[in-house]
Image 1 (cartoon, rainbow, N blue to C red):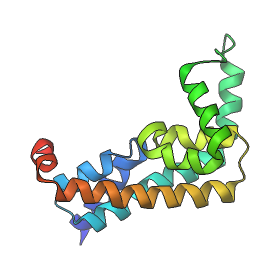
Image 2 (cartoon, rainbow, N blue to C red; image 1 turned 90 degrees about the horizontal axis):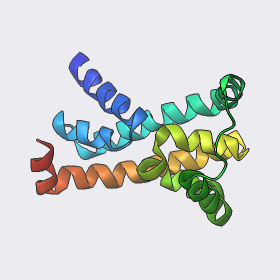
Image 3 (cartoon, one colour; image 1 turned 135 degrees about the vertical axis):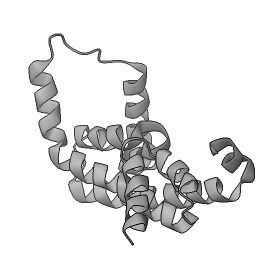
Amino acid sequence: MKTIFLKYLSVALASTLKFFGGPITGVILKLTWIETAICSAIGMMVTVLTLTYIGGGIQALVKKHRKSTPKRFTRTNRLAVNIWRRFGIIGIAFLTPPLFTPIFGPILAVAFKVPRHAIFLWMSISAITWGLGISYIAHKVHFIQDWIK
């Protein structure tokens, strides 16, 4: 019982920083694709929950200790603003696992002043959708399994 919990925890922790780490860890630990998907989604949502509540504080802290003003129009900023203008929180949430990472996505949503309930709703839908899809592909496509191992 303790070892299965540690496997679940490993997959969740791998998904907190980079979402694709969860499904890869799930394949390595020989979990089912459903277990991997659920743990990956939980890992991402832990990061989203944490950063949604402390995101404003992080922004204030960075602003306070920054020595120079940041570049306003970087490639990443332009991409994020374009996605925000076209699709809103749904686009940011949907692209968080593959593009923005679980760390940058919630901070971006907080920067756009999205209400917390909308962040949680759309990020959780995105995490579950991406978790199911990526975990299924990682577990069922054999050349990916061979590449991981």
